[in-house]
Image (cartoon, rainbow, N blue to C red; front, side, top):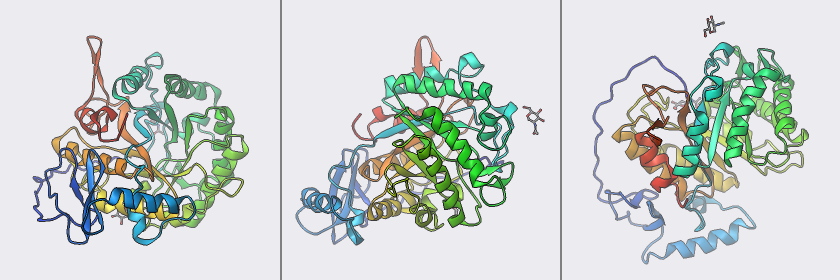
Length: 424
Ligand SMILES: *[C@@H]1O[C@H](CO)[C@@H](O)[C@H](O)[C@H]1NC(C)=O
Ligand SMILES: *[C@@H]1O[C@H](CO)[C@@H](O)[C@H](O)[C@H]1NC(C)=O
């Protein structure tokens, strides 16, 4: 999420009417009011309760078994190619990780990678913030969420010393949030909220050295190497990084450091350029550069691409109205690339306002991701934690009379209980 001071008024949503859904377009699912017929050469195929898609084929609509058999036999030996990459296997339909960001420790961080440590605000009541523990327990126990992303500034963890030496007092506070998350039984994501930077300088390209970045991750990985439900998010939203191949080398340095510190199995999230935009992951060169990053043994096991996508007019996550479900512009082309390359991505930031337009588009996006759960691990909404209810993308539930109440977008689309993410 990046902040913009602009205020934009959005005109009314235009409804378009098609006679038939295009190839790979939606053609059915609960709540779908659009066309149920597919263009010639495509068959409407049920991917889950919420999403049916026009997939290549003609005549009898029995493709789910036909396609599944073909895909399943090929994926075990070789990767799919060409048009095969557009087709999820029959096993897809349910996202593994469904989460919410619990923000606060990152407050004070700007998009130039400067973090004012006095702005860091722990989202825990015992540390003076909102009841992040209560929020997470509610999300986990009532809604069926199983993942929380915990943003924090690099400067906060090291008390403004660039490198890897953790400041014990500050680290203990952040660790309290991490342990609270893990104790609930959730999967927890460490997110260094620094935009590939430290105080304006880009990691490995004029700013901190790769060794300094790797030292941070080595320190964190040594503390958490025995926590199998922890995910390491290397850095939030790199942007305007001049050389993507040099950036991939910085990412490789951090991955190597984490694995050498003994955290050999955990998922590591690899972020691309352009604010980790899912829509430009391929065109920005991030996909090709980051797919070369490997574990110590040369494998890519548990190296997952980190992608963000908002649903507002400029993908900034600063507007309360949504204009797209991102399927054609981002999730479909990316799913095909991931399948062709045998890789996965995790959408660790997405969201919109608590408005009808965002409900419509976010539910569609979630259903599409679930239909392609072989390549998408899941999503994490932005954001709960320490935000006020006036924040455009507020997902903080409110507590009153012994009961938590979710915001509209959470209860309608993001909550696993809403049904769009697949089975609970
Ligand atoms: C950091 O934030 C505090 C208020 O939270 C402010 O007083 C201070 O000037 C800020 N420091 C910098 C360097 O921006
Ligand atoms: C970054 O993404 C925006 C849309 O979100 C796009 O307009 C722009 O061209 C992209 N830039 C690069 C370098 O890919």
